[in-house]
Image (cartoon, rainbow, N blue to C red; front, side, top):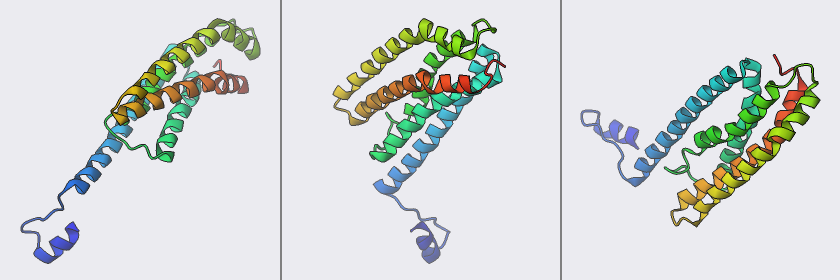
Length: 190
C-alpha cells in the first residue's frame, strides 16, 4: 500500500500505512529478531563456557546437541499449536537453553572426571549412579514448579510455564538417552 500511495502522490510527503495491523506486524518482526539475538548470545556464551569447563571443544559440541533438541521441540510446539510470540513467550528459547544446560553440565563433568582407563560404558554406568537421581529429581521439581504458571489468567504467562516445563522434561529425556549415545558413539574424551 505504501508503494501505491508513493507512486500516486509522490515522495515529497512520504505516506505510510498506519493502524493496528502494521504496528502489530512490525512488533512481531521485532520480537522475532529479538528472540534470534538473545538465543544466539545465550548459545554462544554457554557453548564457550561448557567447552572451557570441560577443557574440550568436542565435549562442548556434544553438550549442545541434547540442549538444542528441547529448544527446537518448543519452537515446533509453538508453531504447531499456533502459540503466538509475545512478551512472555519470546524469551522461552533462551531461558530453556540456560536452564536445561545445567543437568548436561553435571552429567558431562562427572563423565569427564572418571578414570580414563575405564570404557565409555563403565564411565556412563558410574555417571548414572552418581548424578542420575539428582538430575531426575531437580528436573521433576523444576518442571512441575513451572506448571504453576498455568493458573495465571494472563494467557502468554500460562504458555510460558507450560513450554518451559515441557522443555525441561524433554531435556531430561535427551540427557538420559541422546547424551549417552553421543558419548558411546565416539571417543568423547579428546
